[in-house]
Every structure is written in C-alpha cells, then in structure tokens.
Length: 102
Image 1 (cartoon, rainbow, N blue to C red):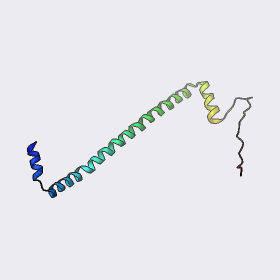
Image 2 (image 1 turned 90 degrees about the horizontal axis):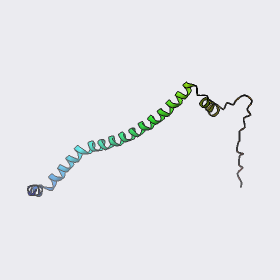
Image 3 (image 1 turned 120 degrees about the horizontal axis):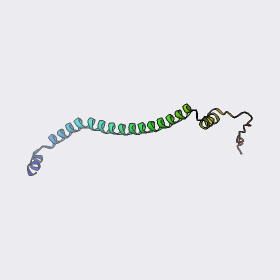
Image 4 (image 1 turned 30 degrees about the vertical axis):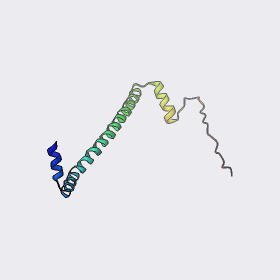
C-alpha cells in the first residue's frame, strides 16, 4: 500500500490528468451504454409481463366465445354491439347539456 502511495506522489499532475482523461474516454461510453441497456431491459421486461397478462385475458375470452357460452355472448352483444332481445325496450339516459352561466 505504501508503494502505491509513493508512486502516486511521484506522478506529475499533468500525467495524472491525462491518465484520468484517457480512463474517462475509454469507460464513459461503455458505462453509459451498460446502464442504458439495463434500464431498457427493465422496461421491456415490464411491458412483456403486461402483454402476457393481456394475452391470458384475451385467450380466456376467446375460449368462452369458441365454447358458445350463452351468458358471455349475451354480455358481449349487449355491451359492445348495443343489441337487445326481441321485445325489450332499450332505455338510454343522457345527461342534459349544462349552459354556461355568465
């Protein structure tokens, strides 16, 4: 350890600055890229997990549709396509427009 301290004391400041600049140039880009890649991997892993969850939900919906689950088909027809059974009266509630008061 003492040898290292003696060696560092013998180094001229200009040489030390030059060595630090070289180290900075060599490792700056690669360290930045490594950190950037780690962050991107984390983001992509998170998005992949979300996509897997969405795939599972869609796959379950597809299975229900393929099985011909009557209750599920009725729910989809009512919500997505605004369909109703014969003889039913469809009632839609619409909020009245509010007039601007001056």
